[in-house]
Length: 417
Ligand code: EPZ
View (cartoon, rainbow, N blue to C red):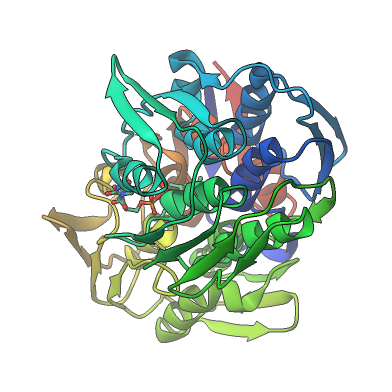
């Protein structure tokens, strides 16, 4: 197990470059399964979750080779259309191969991805959409088994704008017979990036980023290359790092529009923000003002930024209210922040945070990716030393976070225990 020993108190100053988006890379790597040939995906971040997806693709029979931040996927000879429980337990986003497998091979069998620390993570909307497209889907012995003579286009309404369900159904529809419409689709930038990749390999998709996505089925897809968009959640996390340490940070390789909800809330909290075409400068010189936040699907405030922003609000000059409306259990970081001297409580899906002047050091447990990021940020702000256990969770979504922050003045030491 890895730990972080962090000594806080230093303002972070300088420039930090954002990597490619984890939540774009994962569906796009899965979508390579639809293509009979070699695809080159560029600006792929070096993350544990990406390693697991590459392992899943190789398990299925794809040839996967990497050089620097480019991943080549050759899915010419896929031999297997099943993802085992062992692989699925490593990363629930492995469920993103479901749509591509049944889309190209008319069959797929994936172990039910378990819930995780932030919620039960059901797949009912994925399954409902596949059934609408003519797949027989049975769920037994902990597996989802889907098969069909051939998928056909359908008019699908999602009860919730689920990111994963939208992505799986887009991938299932690109080789289906006829036209599919996904209504109440997720509008996240990663959905647009997936559409752009699929259209580059010959799909015919319109409307990603809006409520309705239209996919006209085609016969075959052809190899091509694609560069994934920058990671908006990594960018937002760095913005909070600059604000919580009262530093002056420039975040480069970012699409400001993708982090607009975070920019708006930081400005409301009194943080000075400047933006350019592909950079954002965060300059904070005093405690933040309290703000209220309610997480919503894009373009609302992102749930993946809720823990990190809560860390900032523990130091606000007043009381803030944070409501998590996307996941049912995304408050694991609250107990740990309380151990660091924060004054906050959870009532149902709402957390009330009374700002304090200073956080203290503590030994805390990292329970999931974004909660871990939140605890790093809180530890950077505290004057004393903190110990974060199980930081492997953080490695799932942040490439070398300690070296990036130490280059700006942080004191984070990784200990392999
Ligand atoms: C994606 O997860 C992201 N993961 C998550 O990021 C992100 O938090 C989430 O979207 C919301 O933005 C990847 O892209 C790999 P959802 P996903 O389906 O697709 C319910 C991170 O930290 N739901 O949009 O699993 C579900 O329970 C991760 O990088 C159903 O009810 O999220 C949840 O309450 C964490 N039935 C809500 O929808 C379904 O069939 C949103 O889930 C599917 C989802």
